[in-house]
Length: 67
Ligand SMILES: [Zn+2]
Image 1: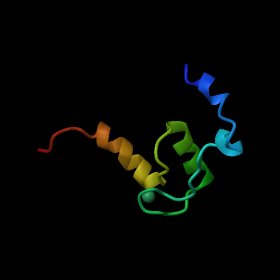
Image 2 (image 1 turned 120 degrees about the vertical axis):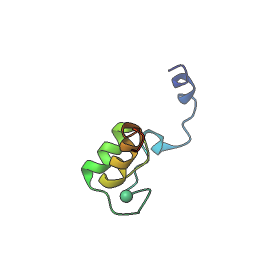
Image 3 (image 1 turned 180 degrees about the vertical axis):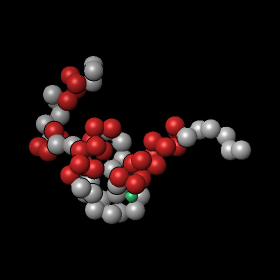
């Protein structure tokens, strides 16, 4: 939060306000849909397709040991 004050002194880049938007999955490179892009922006994580985005979540939730 405190870092916002520093941004006022950095007017070098006009596009600094725009978030970096990728249009392809960071894992497999498949084109992302608008919903997939928005979901990636909301999670503030890497841009992933639905398949890989779900795998990212599954890794944490599916922590039960086998057998
Ligand atoms: Zn993918």
